[in-house]
Image (cartoon, rainbow, N blue to C red; front, side, top):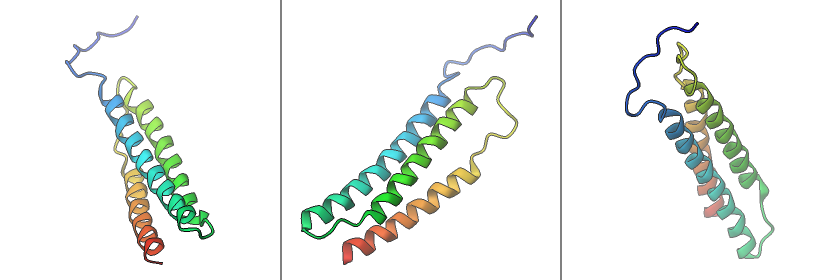
Length: 109
């Protein structure tokens, strides 16, 4: 026999979906940046440099995996005691800064 079910709030259960959407947008942003860098090289007639594009794709995949993991964690009831994604947010934030620097360097050459 299970215990009493807590009353539902109007937005109960939407946090996992919002979290998944925000991580998906982040992932798409990284993919878009990588694609634009690759298309710039192809359009300029020079050899394509796959380093910056590869970095963007790897970080986009990491963001997607983090998002799926966060959605699964936030979908649990009752919620786990520690749900703060500090390490993941630091990783993605650092990756954004690195990709900005790489993009500026590639575009200035």
